[in-house]
Amino acid sequence: AAAPVQPVQAAARKPQAARHGTSLLVLQGSNLGTAEDLARQLAEAGEMRGFSTQLASLDDYAERLPANGAVAIVCASYNGVAPDNAAEFHRWLDKADDSLNGVRFSVFGCGNTDWAATYQAVPRRIDERLEALGATRVHSRGEGDAREDMDGAFQDWSDALWPELVKAFDIKTGADTPVQSEPLYTLE
Ligand code: FMN
Image (cartoon, rainbow, N blue to C red; front, side):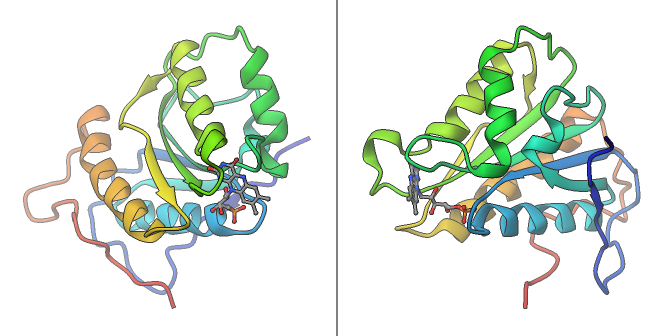
């Protein structure tokens, strides 16, 4: 069955960067909404930067990661185990021997250092397995700690993601429409 992919609306704001239309698939693994919210922010920011963006759960893309465009993953852990909407993806990735050549990705993990032994276990595992299966990491994994400044860590990671994507996909931003390095919107 077709996955329920949500096209991302660029809210009530016009894109502020040239529309190059590079695909950006944002996948989230979330039980309580933190990773889902951050994934939505990332997808909206991608639209503002001229990407053609889709937002879905990790399980919607088990066994079918696209080899065109970028894949950005935002995922939590629960006692070292994947959130409910990422369980199938995680199972697949663990046992997969598919070649993920051509898949270009970056991962941000939502975690909590109270769970010291399994802090960031799931996003770390996803990041490692994607690389082991031949996918290319376009930007290093980010970590957010719910006991500290999760939003700040996410902002730092995503601020650094955009220039990496511009490089990896040879995106021409145009001299008068530079890709912004500052957030272009605030959440209400
Ligand atoms: N964070 C970790 O890094 N590793 C864990 O093993 C872990 N286990 C958790 C277990 C429970 C019952 C709860 C409530 C949180 C746990 N966390 C763990 C923290 C969550 O991953 C973190 O709060 C995350 O932001 C939740 O994301 P979500 O709201 O998208 O589900």
